Length: 116
Image (cartoon, rainbow, N blue to C red; front, side, top):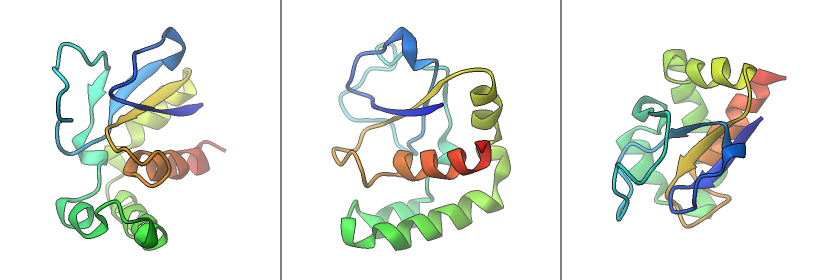
């Protein structure tokens, strides 16, 4: 199972392996406070796509299409997540305030399609 969690929420043993999927380090979070198994910047949207999207819900569908296209071109960026998910739960960590329209939610959808 692929779960989502904000970086500001406390870790839970049920999270499984935890991966930060942001290109930039989250504001206000010290590295030693964020219990994670990896920071996979390469799985985050490109800087250009991230800036274009700007967390605008009106751009969500187009963002997903563009982000999925980026991911398709770089399977090395997300294969680790699939491998880990086959062994148990994983949690994708993100910093966005919008719980529905963020790159981790899109990545979760992308990965779950490949796990089926």
